[in-house]
Length: 227
Image (tube, rainbow, N blue to C red):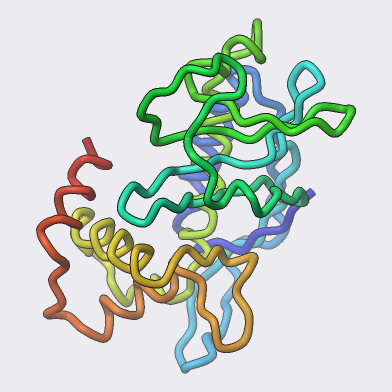
């Protein structure tokens, strides 16, 4: 069970996502603990939030636990690592090549997934090989859960509560890409005093610098992601 606090207007989006994943064979339980609560912000002002708990976000299929999703950043040679709640992914995978230990085929991959067996064996699997591990289960459940985890981080971001409403998607994604290339990826779970999570840093940059424009290279990356 994992607790989240999200902007109140995102609850319907969360409910739809959970229902869609469960229809594919997921087993996610969503509980609303405290709806439409007013939370004061450290810098002044307030936002309306909803507290929820989620279970089943670390999927276990056929004896394999999905630990993390890796997104390869070609420019830096690093991976954006999204981990499932309550599990740790070995640090070695942060810079691992996007290989598939299952098929051994050397090809250009953006996304790979880290799995752990009941005996403690780790394996990195390409997206197209997930079906061999999941057998009768839709691989979209596992991939969709990691996408949901990224959205939960964004939906809980207090810096985004009205400060950059209506921000163009290309601008937001290209700024994020530029930030990761320069500073690396800092998830909310690894942030600490003096080090902001990437989501907060990006939104603060956009809010404090309304005339900021990222490079065309970063904009091209953002358009490719949206496509």
